[in-house]
Image 1 (cartoon, helix red, strand yellow):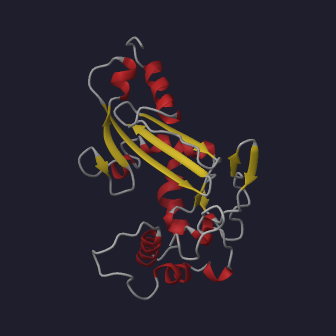
Image 2 (cartoon, one colour; image 1 turned 135 degrees about the vertical axis):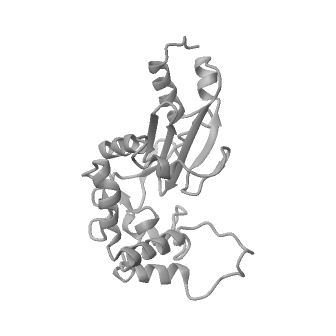
Image 3 (cartoon, one colour; image 1 turned 180 degrees about the vertical axis):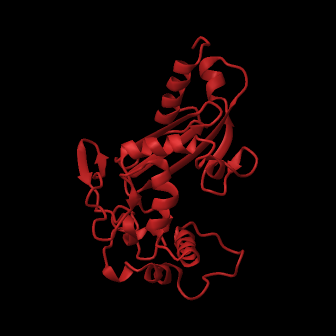
Length: 245
């Protein structure tokens, strides 16, 4: 999907910058990015892209008989109390999004308008900072989304729902506490937008950092550095009775 229409001068895939009405129907996007034949024999080539999530969206809509935005509203946004979140619509995509830019020296350059609606089930959700906080809280509830998102294989690797699970020494190093902490993280970046979400479920803590500056590094708890690690460290210090160092 990512390379279906080539890239622009900034290396951003053009399919995310187009508002071509012919790509609005989900089936049209799937046919455009997947095509009608395999590019290589099964199991012989790896290609990082978002097309598989468009196919999952089509399956979910076919099985449920409901549009994907309705499924998100019923199963995610409404239970989590997120009134400012929705699947990006084709007509308003980009209209309410914060502008992203690149910085070279002292010069700032605005990047091309981004079409979140092209993502669909591959991540085409628009939200607000307040709703993001509500989502983080919801994910930490045992009856919320936590069991689903924070499930998977043994610690130390990639999880099936797109997150990374590990045992972090962040708390032990920063707070001189025994043991280590379970941490789940999910980074993402496209066209200058960068988001890092991290959870410390054993402490009921989560943090998210967002940047609209191309190339901005937000770090991670696993690495023990960056904005998200600093936020969670500060939260742990505020909740712990142990002396900080």
